[in-house]
Image 1: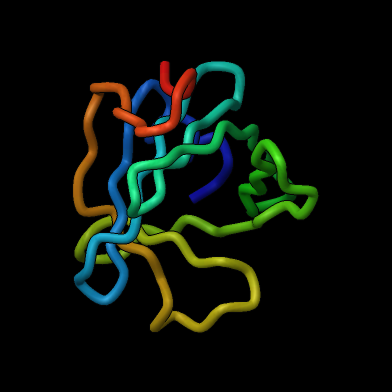
Image 2 (image 1 turned 30 degrees about the vertical axis):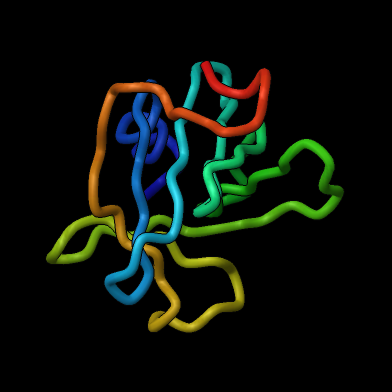
Length: 110
């Protein structure tokens, strides 16, 4: 997916991800290229994303390293692959919703 296709697919939505069939996490994509990632334990981190070529790169509060991914259209749906990772490690979108995330940390969420 191009960054424009990713924005059209994800903005104002929450995507739920699995890895190898097991729940992995969820991310809510907000206007202005902002996002909220929810970890498996229910805590959340606010972030921003930007395009770098075909990659979508995220930086989350409290972290200095960015995480870059490519989003792929596959026969069974959409997958996200971290740069430098093998296809077997892809995250698969298992659910797409318009409801905001619920986070266990205070003052996080939309």
